[in-house]
Image 1 (cartoon, rainbow, N blue to C red):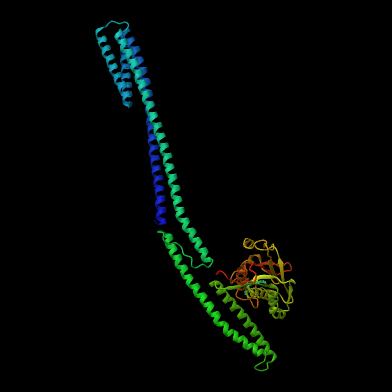
Image 2: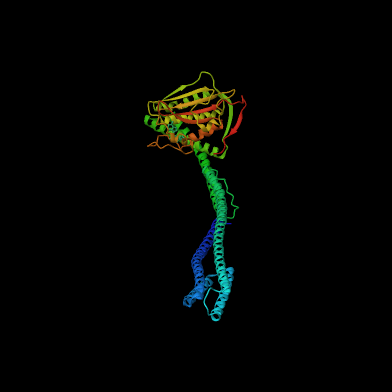
Amino acid sequence: MKITTRIISGYGLLIAILAGLVVYQVITIRRMSSISRTLSQINFQNARDCLQSMRDRDLVEEFTKKAFLSSDYLENLRMHQEDFQRSMRGLGSHANSGEEQEQLKRLSQDWDGYMADIGILQQNVPQRGPIPPNLQDDLDILKAQTESVYHAILQSMETTAKKTSKTAETAVLVLWCASLVAFVTSSLVSLLIVRSISKPLAHLTEGTRAIADGQFSYRLDSSRGDEFAQLARDFNKMTSRLNELDELKKDFVSHVSHELKVPLASMRETIQLMLEEIPGPLTEKQKRLLELNLQSGTRLTSMITNLLDHSKIEAGVMKYELKKQDLIPLVRNAIAELDLQAREKQIQLKADLPENPLLLECDSDRILQVMLNLLGNAVKFSPKNSSVLVQVEKVQQAPEGLPERYRGLIADSVADGYFGLITVADTGPGISDLDKEKIFEKFHQVRQGKQIAGQGVGLGLSICRTIVQAHGGAIWVEDNPAGGCRLMVLLRSGETGEDVVARSSAPL
Ligand code: ADP
């Protein structure tokens, strides 16, 4: 089912329940208010009529007795008889329970009995005196029946009040039940909606993260029947296109780099021959120009080598031949290789190396490549007339400055072994804390106002990190207390003795 359909139907159901609840409440409240209005009206009328009828009955009794003593009271008696009859009619018009009507009917019959008896007596016994016993009985019956009517009215009022309170109780109960149903439904609907959105969203986040990390082969599940399935299909289409483009780019870079490398090498060789004046003598100016040409050619070759290495790493085909060997001669070679370049900038390359050999399990070409890169950067970024210090130490513990993310990978101490720690310290512009991790990302270059002569394409340190990590080591940058920065490389001694171990880098 589509997410929008799910949301609309879920919340539609909820709104329907709430609307039903509101309608029911309005109807109940109206009913209750009409009942209580009627009840108060009836109560008032009934109470008044009942009291009136009782008073009228007392007056009828009083004037019946007086009329038998003197005919002067006959007129008053008739008036009070009419009043009593009016009160009876009033009570009859408001009587709504069966009991009330029954008692009123009896009262009316008793009244008729009284009226008949008094009529007969007045016609047949003209003399005056106390009222006859049968009339007194009529009056007593009338009194008792008036009270019975009064009790019936009270009973009816009580029943109506109970009915009203029962209706109110039912309304409260229905309100509770409906609120509970609404609460459970809304919780369920919200849970279902959140679940149906959060799961595919988490997959999408995972997918975009994988793409951001360069894993263009990542695919999302598109088998659902909702909008996320369409999104997943589009996402998969995008990633497969990105994958194709990435493959094309890799092929292009590796082919072009490879094709450029050969003619560039022959150009450098030709220049070298000319500089050695084998084809013929050169003027000083011509020599200087050719030297500049050779330097540019060397830089271009190093960039192409970096691009080729990067392609190899990306394809996961960068191979290492790990062998136990002394680190010191490797470092000395790197210093010697960069000595001329450093001297041209009046930079002194200082070395602080241990006397004894420092045996490590490593691929010598690759470690030399790392050293050349670090030293090359140090010379490139150092000001004229400064010095670059290369230090190599044999340590038993990982240094304090080792970034946290490496701590889990590299044991703090090596049981039977040791670490080789290489430090390349310069007094150049240094690297801000913000860039300390980023400079090891591919193509990342720190903007330092103007472009530094000889700055490459931002691949050198990324390749260094891949090489060092393939050796199970760590590479990071720290601030140099004397200004500038110092690049640190920590390599493990390894455990394989003289055997050669082949290893390859994980693809980038
Ligand atoms: P590039 O070939 O462009 O020099 P790198 O990967 O070797 O690429 O270096 C990446 C960036 O790190 C450089 O562009 C530079 O901004 C910075 N960087 C590297 N080494 C140093 C250093 N010793 N001093 C200052 N900045 C450096």
